[in-house]
Amino acid sequence: MSDPLGADASAFAIAAAVRNGTHTAAAVVESALARIARENPAINAFTAVAFERARSKAVAIDAARSNGATMGPLAGVPFGVKAMIDVAGLTTTAGSALHRSDPPATRDAGVVRRLEAMGGICIGPMNMDEFGMGGTTQNATFGCTRNPHDPSRTPGGSSGGSAAGVAAGFVPIALGADGLGSIRLPASLCGVFGLRPTQGVVAREGPLGASGTISIVGPMARCAHDIALAQDALRGSANTLGRLFASPVDIADLRVVRASGYFAERIDHDAADAVERVSRALDVKCVVDFPEPQRARAAAMLVHASESAVGKIGALRSRLDDFDPLTRDRFLAHALLPAQWYLHAQRFRQWHAAEVVRLLDPLDVLLVPSTPCVAPMIGTATIMLDGNEMPTGPALGWFTQPLAGTGCPVLTVPIARRGQLPIGVQLLAHPGREDLLLRVARFLEQAGVVAAPVASRGSHAVHG
Amino acid sequence: MTPFDPYAYLDAASTAIALPVPPACRDAVAANIARLAAMAADIIDFPLPTAPGGASIAATDET
Image: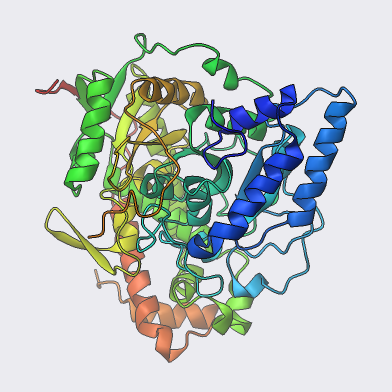
């Protein structure tokens, strides 16, 4: 078991140490705060740190333990949240200058309350593309977040601060939000696990700027067990998914297949090799045609675009210069879209989600690439994929976007690649079957195929 | 059918909802609208089947 005070400590190890009294929550939090103070300036994962709040929560947990209280499954576990999620006492910015001077939130978002009800300790907000509109976490107001595996590269986005903070070992768990891939994409580029839960299973109250019907809050972590603990907490269930990790996992009964066609094109050697390694480990013998991937991507993007502009027309009229130059033109365009495009996209999405469930009927888990390549250098405008030059943002989301509207849970797992830049693979299952994804993820961990070591800047870096 | 003109649409929609688009943003906003219009056309033109067939499953020649 890892040192509960170390950068590579899992949430499970920390909670066990706090429960059995090996370490105090106060010591765990001080260790995390010291790491963040020392290393965050180079990565820019956290945009603010709630020092006193975190210390106060830790003291309360230690006092409760001394008084014989039952400790939760996340006892003493520090976590961060995407900057669109309310943390009482801090301003919720959603990565925007529009909200930088807002008064502090007066209460925690539901997802923060749920993690803290299980013993977690919120450390603070983590950087993002403005209002989640982007895939690289370049932010004119809060600065660019850097990939801990190679600071000259992007962590992906829009939950790039959350992914980078977990990869750097600042916290074992962070919350992101996924509209078109904003958890799964940065998880792939930063080499961590990232779960987009089943649509609707996580409380929506609190996130600022979350897209109406397509965005969902989910956890990122460095091991499958911690994803299970965090997702249990987000759902308000103490140990449903966590129980899967009580003994070694066997997946002989699971039917796992790989997506072909669209998902085997516009992919470079690293991403193709990642899917191949997982396929071999799982003894995948079948491929399937995912229905209408291009149109599914288009529908998800139309829904996301239309919903992203809701509530912003007033600011677009009166404070246009306060929008990030990287998002301003998109929000103007999105505010002008006709309702018919949105309604057709939602109608298609409904049909498509049913088609995906039909596809999965005789199956358990579908393998899909997460990103078509490893993290590009920061500022890269376009990338080449299979001879096609594509803008970096849309290219990085090429494989996450078609799955976004399905309502299915999707987990990015990080491939073990010693000395190479990280890349992940997506696992998709029936709505409500996060347990299948976590069983497969755990099996792959046991087999040494997936792993999320804390980034050691320089040692993993491969400068291109 | 007349091809979609993103500039004409931009002008009409921005007037209709009183959302001015500064000249410096005009080309980029029109490009965004054009990109989304192409996606919308692809979806609107797609005949949603009433009884869709199942997806094909084929054995790979690998593993």
